[in-house]
View 1 (tube, rainbow, N blue to C red):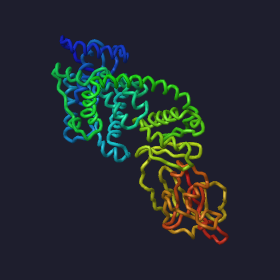
View 2 (view 1 turned 90 degrees about the vertical axis):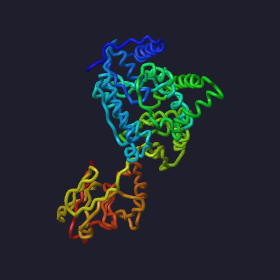
View 3 (view 1 turned 135 degrees about the vertical axis):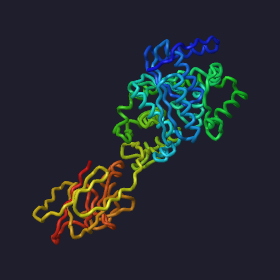
View 4 (view 1 turned 60 degrees about the vertical axis):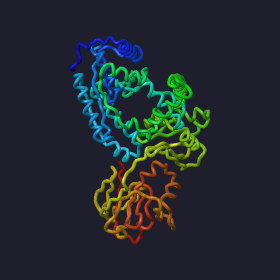
Length: 476
């Protein structure tokens, strides 16, 4: 990799102190060493430009392998593309390798029922993780400053967050098994960053949305904090940083305490969610219950801390009847199912409707349905719920495979009257997650078969049946 050589030694006292403080943070706090590989996240703003410049300053001394990563969110039209081009040229000026990607964040947010902010973060960090793995980097450096810690504190305070949300931005945390996210500028203020950039004659790009007060974070930065400094405490930032540091220590202690309970409380982890056992959770202190729920959800789903209002609604499920459900956000739900509270990501899919014939092999959602006419001598009722035999003459030429929906009803085999599918599933004690996986074979008007569960009495084989249709349902 090409590296910058012969970095000019700056004799300005401010710059000398800045370099020393930055270097001390890297070596003493974050434990970086010679030949470490660092990916530096650069947006083009002044914070990330200063971050990169400081790493470049130390390349010759520590033989760091520094590269640049930039993600274009495509949220500001030409301005976003301008920032991308700026980062590319900046990387080239330092003779550093760079990785750039982009995505339509708005469309992704819409498709995944996420806020723009969360969608942007998820896409950005997915790319950062990919680059870190491909480049085999030990560290991913981001340009958060002490001002970001203070703003985030108030942002989460107004959201009604608990201790986890108020404990600040950690100086380091895992990104992957082999890569840590580090934030070497947390000990610097925004004014320090700007002073450094001006003294070094650095160029950077200004995000015009940072001066708009219709964003909550910007209101905190431009309205609330200046008022607090002028009217209440000139050192409000220092006070919040001290408090945030104390809360970070408390949060670490509580998190270690919580981990002792998790193996008894959290279970059934899958790709789409997990469960919490109600009985052991209910025996704990109310504060610990809230912290366990907060920790489990934010850790598993990788989302920002939830408001205490949401946590309280989830806690209410501990005493709610089975079937009670709440929305945590647009993509995550929680519901009571017997002795469990189940947390699941909402999977949005189009309703399944597949028109088929009365014979053949048909695939849907990874499953298979086999239909074939058989002679009377081959008719055997095995008791296997995934294999059924129907009176072929009672069935139309065209059949339909689809999801079940509210309002569906049929006459379960052996009964006289109609029953709602939803009631049938409740009576069979089908867990709520499994209810969503129930598919039907139908005519245009009637249900023929709830796959693997029960056929409609209307289509059963009788002594008058002359032709027989065997159906086999094969789950994936």
